[in-house]
Image 1 (cartoon, helix red, strand yellow):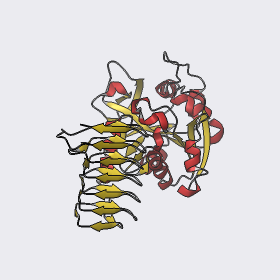
Image 2: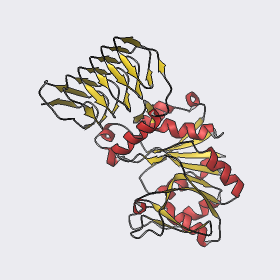
Image 3: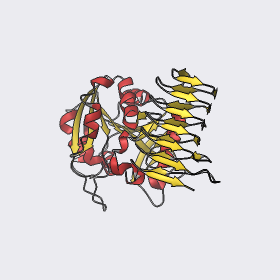
Image 4: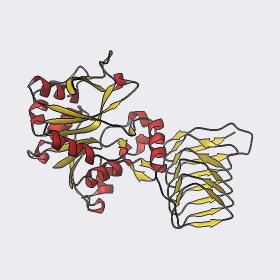
Length: 353
């Protein structure tokens, strides 16, 4: 069995962060978003992975290379334009080569990985197996209509959804899916829709089984989603303190890497702080991930993702609910402030009054 993982697209809802980096290289709890998808697949026993990338984008290749550092074998499949998820499957046919496979959208984070879905797909012996999730806003997703424990129709982003069961970014297929993606037509928005491919399977008498996700699942398309995923992962960390801790109180769980110095500060976990970072006269509150070579001094930060080489200094009130790119500086001037929320792209510079 093989795997296809998407790592393309343009991440428009995460701009300005994605003006300068691939969305799938944004860290969640100081680990690349794409690493989670690869780990889920690897831990289910699959080692051959095709990663879909934007044509001419070398950033994913440069980081993951042949996959050996992650214990997998990676082939890269360039997509010339965002022509739909069914198009992704279409261009992956040579890589799959008549094997069953899992198709995983690389910006999805979930509890428990994907092994259970693969097991259920094999047990059902169906042509397609979908992971569904009950959502409050099904019109944002492909929606499955279910009757007598069978999927009977699937509609993409319907105005009047027939259920609250969204099709998540986890799909399992046998080779029958290639007939579907090679026979459907582009939708009104010019894409080959995965929901149309699924409906093709149903219309031709093929079997689509399903599971309902009972744990936490998130499509990390917006900054708030990234922060929620960061919270989820941090809630499950274990204490691992290797850095230098001086005159500092640590409450709750924390991962503090080597060559980190924390002095005259307070850390309220869960928190993760990467190598070569300095925390001084600061307060780090729960669900905060701080990357490598950062400096947080005379400031309070919380519920945020702070990427590498960034600085928060002399901000007299809390920086919270924030997503800071690489090499960002936020410098305060000690005047009274309310809490601040920032979404700043790489190399931003901000002074706050």
